Length: 161
Image 1: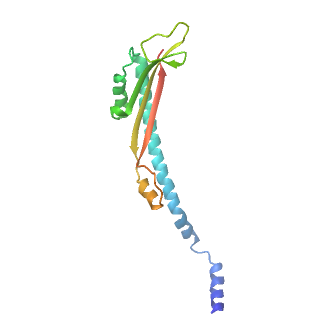
Image 2: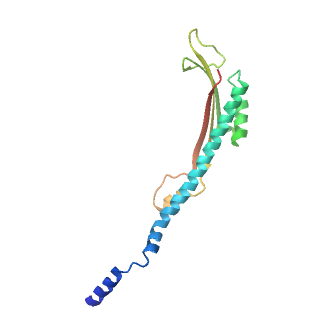
């Protein structure tokens, strides 16, 4: 019996058939996860670029219109239309800085000798659902903490004075 086992072992040691299929079977899950992750990352990056462009468009509009007050509701409307998000996802701030210090009143003036600068800041934040159920996938491996959505932000700041 031991002689027969040794003969079979020598025969199998030199046989390399099936290694390609075995390597594919071992690496295929990793390659699939990598491809799914790249698709997910591409979608999130594309959304971030869209939000950045919408915020930039809004600050360009503010630069052209030159607000006289700190009321930015008309800019929220512009940003919502550009990004396709609800009003709660848009934050517009119009503010005055004197020598780099933010002031509480936009329409005020800086003290003599201070350099005034007025700014418009637009931030668009929206939770984007993921394309794949990563939480279920992580649960297979006993990992917790994956969310089914990712917060994507786009912002722009322009000095109008």
